[in-house]
Image 1: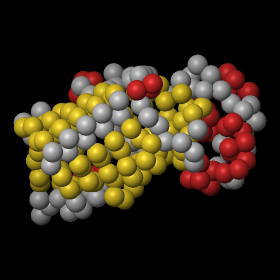
Image 2 (image 1 turned 30 degrees about the vertical axis):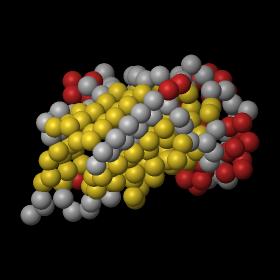
Image 3 (image 1 turned 120 degrees about the vertical axis):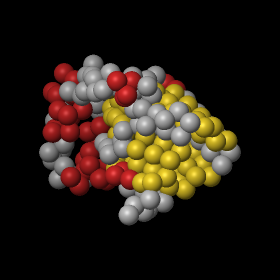
Length: 203
């Protein structure tokens, strides 16, 4: 039987938390982690982010953390390291009530690898993004017409269509060039050349 580990209804300060493979972890309700180091080896299916806040924490994904929605958690002044695929950051108003409780501000992703990660309802000027080979579309809906008119290598135009018609509240989406270039039947060099001429992209 899989053990359940609950971190709830308390404040933890200055500790190292290792979320290992094996157990199922519940973060929240009403959990505050402050000045902690959180090491995540567990898979998405073994993590439930119920509610709470992480303040000035370092969050390290040991493997590739896939498909984790952080909408229930408030993230402030945190540093992310490791590889994140399909993670969503910031609160959302288009899902259920629980997903409106979170948020993100003053966080640093400069040492992280982001692929298909989205940011919702936040001030992106307070977010430090990773540079190339990661790249980020900022407010793509506003640039949608111009992005749609451009020629894109391989099948990358399908990514453009997805990016330009995002869920409500999306303010940015970040990608990893080697990963998305391979999926789009193009090269990193061709993709970079196209991105450098396009509006609203941070590289």
